[in-house]
Length: 556
Image (cartoon, rainbow, N blue to C red; front, side, top):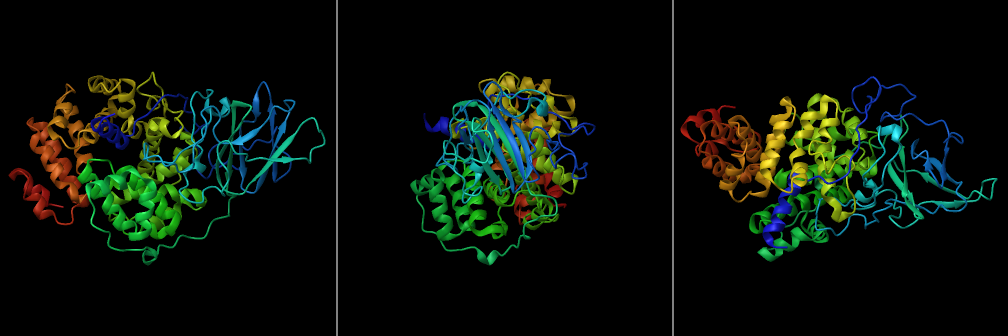
């Protein structure tokens, strides 16, 4: 594989490519959305799943799951409070060998050494939970969110082929072996039968109402800081290709300096820094706690901020979600940073819920304001996209379909459709074998109200892949027949190329290439909006624009 191919793949990581698997998205009765809000009646847990009184009850702090050779685990999803002891009862005549994590596809190291193929350290996967929960049996796999941790993780449990369950001899019937584990850490835990790997189940352990972790305290002085050495191109390439080297630099020079090195490395090498920045954010939060969120730059497409928010959930879960988010996210005066922070929450909850899309969207719905919820939804859909590409790290999202370029957007309640389509063209590229013309045609098949999102997503993909060639970006944005949709494409590309204040040149260069007046106006408007969000000094930037845009650029 040559450098051009690697850069193409790296570009699609930002664009978040999906992969095969399919599942129907269910809705909570009477709500029109996947999960009820926290005010739902007590018979339903915080994610819209009823507490199962039968066959799983065995006392207030113990629940039973039965394993039968012809059926698998019954029930195959169990929602419990943390501290609950779950007992597996083997009714198969000794055919049960329960293991944590992935069944059919095998397991990987937590965190991986991955080279950030999908910017996450996902590993174990499963084939599904109860058909009555989703409306259809699973056809794809989910990641075990325990694999997400960069340090510590879910109580230090073993992964993959190692046992989670201890033999339990307390049962009355010796012909039915029992295995038990107490789920003290909140999270989504997948396990399978090593003797029949297609038999997979899920335990969701949530902190009981009223129990919350200590409030987060952001102490910026807790972060190390030192001047890094002079870097060569080879040094930058090594840093962007080695997660452990990122950790080494973080500990030696501090997260802020390391993030800047990642940004410079992308400029010098052409390698994507977004994935490495995700790793840096997760490692920084694992090592320094809430201090990792202080003074974050939005470089590398806000990858570090996303990673910090992802790691937040590994140790703290969602019991104190609103307060945790308020502590870590910028206030409303920094609209761009706040959006990226809530977007990072979406990444985090999607991974923490082990890629249960319905659950993740429901958790986003708990956030206090509509804008934050929408930003969170966008992170959920991007994480779903990213997980779909991550066959290299051992799992596929169940919420994609190799035959349907519009899934899951076409199976969602209307509330989520636009946010879904903002990432959907990356899936379309996979379905259509990178044929951009067919992707443009598919966007025309999207609901009329979502075509702007779809063509914006298409432009984001084009900009990510051809970030160093604005001429090609413009040519690909000519593929849609409508000038309006070409404008949406160029807007999506401009947002990708001019992300932070260091990328002003790229934004101006793109717009200067556009010769169709309507499309050019969309481009200039896009980069002016972005300059207002991220540029520390508008005057030098605005002075570079066509005369008709300078006054508008300076007007806040």
